[in-house]
Length: 312
Image 1 (cartoon, rainbow, N blue to C red):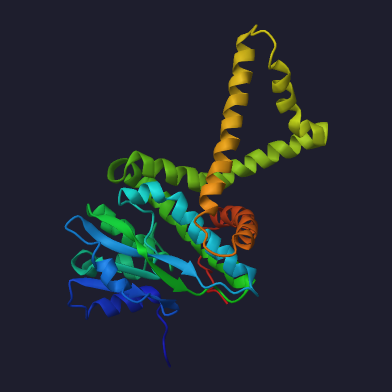
Image 2: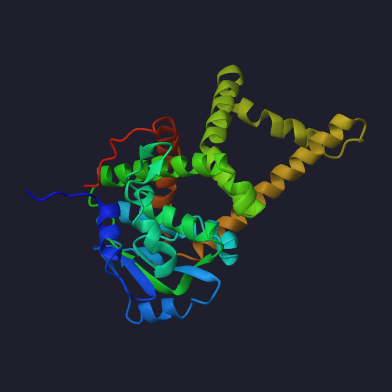
């Protein structure tokens, strides 16, 4: 009887036989572009321990899920551009990534990696995040090859996409709490990295709180109550500045206005990174992000569970 031990064990067994200076990991459903391996090699120097490819989902006009996942990859890439500029990404995607063998071989042969032990539990997935974190912890940088675009396949069904998102969020929260508690964000990463991780993983809770407050306002004051504070702020414009409250309200209005403007600029710049069928990708991606908000909450509440099904 054939026994399937999972991706971690397969990679661990495979690296036993690697004698070269660099090792390349590629998923079975991922295609590396011609010349991509050579270009990835060109990024290495003494201070760089890992180089990942950019990941693109193969689009299928019959399946909006492929557009949603393509949106997610571009959104993640765009959102972490600042951190990646300093060689400190959250993760180099395991679909196509290259490392210096000497940095990862012993670690990948260890029980910690083979079983993905976190808080005494086996984390089946997110081996790519664990490897990226390991390289950063050793004092090396990790970068993404901007000129290497590997093509991968999306899960075949909507259920598969949801299962994939659940796995990502559960594994993400496991690593977030681990790195938060072991001092990674304070001692081994830049302050910007720690702040972005805290913001990203706490965002679902903050969003839920805001939605709950908005819902309470709606119940008490009706639909116009949702805009009551805005109307009250506008009423102050042009009137004499007669109190500290007035200054505070005007400051709040200014901050809110700037926030909306920055959001529109962010969306415009992000949309420019999409190469094909932008409207469909943005529409499907918006739906996916909304769904991901609730999936993230579910993942946060169930991150310790082991029933992480594979995508269909």
